[in-house]
Length: 448
Image (cartoon, rainbow, N blue to C red; front, side, top):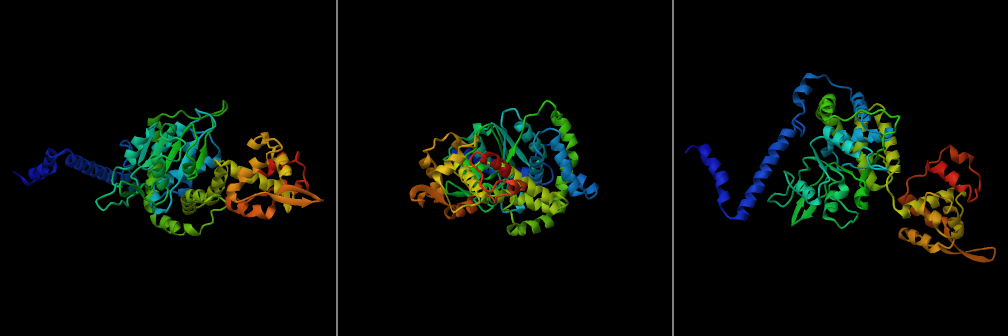
């Protein structure tokens, strides 16, 4: 018997033993297959129809990165309808999937739309075409996603830990079938842990590294903790006057071949520059582009990539992120706090405002829930402000006692939970002390 046959028999004969031993060997075999597949993906993308990048990169000259990223935006614009800032975020995120291991955080996307049939599935088809090693799962149940996250080379070994990031870019379409609104879902905890490179998900005494970029598209809201870790991308339904191309996979693949070659070339040729930029990302000021800590973690790799590419992309990336985070979902308490700050500002930041004055001004905002509050809703107002440590107090003026809020007690919450107030030309023409009826127009000017 030859040594080769002996080795094969030693590999497969153990399947004759008990079922527990068989399961262990099956898991080992799957891990070996996943490792082999991952080694192939270092040279080829996940889909077999892609061109061999190694040959394309060797024969092609060094491309202009800024122009290639602009070409990526134009490719997306052929099929999707959204504003310029959303296109910028999508293009930078695609580039991020090819080098996310260099950063301490990764960016998640929350693709949503005001109405169904606005291009969310099409957007994920495009990302599936352009991302590195995508795993597209339309309407997958939570068990399937958990199995995908816990298999492969990143699975824990005998040392009970795993240090390898996810070997794929997770694309969950119609994830309202996968996730509910409850925070008490194991899958939500797994996805939350994958936003940071150093985080590990603990399961059955083993730690798993689930670090990697992910996209969620749904007709429903995401759990709040997961939505807070995502960059919102809002797609619009195509108007009758807009001209977009129909997505035909074979034609789109052929058209995107040069973009895929550039992405592979950029990943290899700019590794040192990206590593230097990632190392200094901790000293970059993201406050203007991303208002919350989780938003800053999402923005960090995209801004670093834009800085490496250069040209007008650093300024464009910061402007785009500041715009899209303005559309992020916020709690009612944060919305109320923001409206109160604007009301204080247009009144010249007085020392205090009475609860009745605040309620009267808030009631004029037709697009807010408190527009329907009655005049005696002081307790409802206080209940939303209590989590910030803000309480009304008895105030005295002209011999009368009334409930109100001191500006100095609100300032700390304004600084902690709200982005900096952007003052434009509208502030110069506002009245010194506007009335409650004038507040809605001033509010719209300042919050635009």
